[in-house]
Image 1: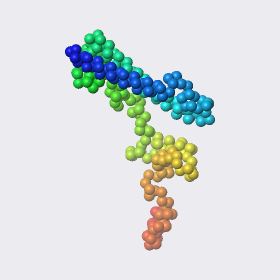
Image 2: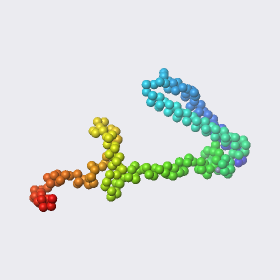
Image 3: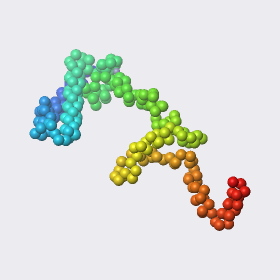
Length: 226
Ligand SMILES: [Zn+2]
């Protein structure tokens, strides 16, 4: 890389570093770097009546800390790039040694590896996609997948029925809050032994709804073939 270009990137890096340092200072000034949770929250005591409130504060402190660390890491990266300018290796990929295209440096002057190597450094989860999941999940999901016989010819007591039978012990009949929804879709089964809706009708109910002449026929029929 020629001297003019190097000068240009050095200027860009120094500006970027100054910006980042300023941001970091502002973040740190917002609270003392080592402020206790009491100072941070301006509460009189850290022994709160509502510990969960402090949990929220704690989360905010940690998030703030992470954001600051991110800025600090950015400064480290810039320093490394400045070192590379000094020792004449700026623009070379740290991993494969190839020249990093100037378009990439234009966008990311602190880049110390090329695009191809950066892709290889992607998080394992992102590269693996589905393959990153534990193999046992294939058997565990969907629930009762091995013993759920819905949609198959089997009409007996299956895994889903077993779960429903046990889960009923936890069911709150007429839950006054109507809010938990814990059992929505859990008890989608009918009473055992019933497959189709028509089977829920008792024989008496069936006979009762027959027109009189048909009723006589049916009763006569039943007498002959009990
Ligand atoms: Zn590379």
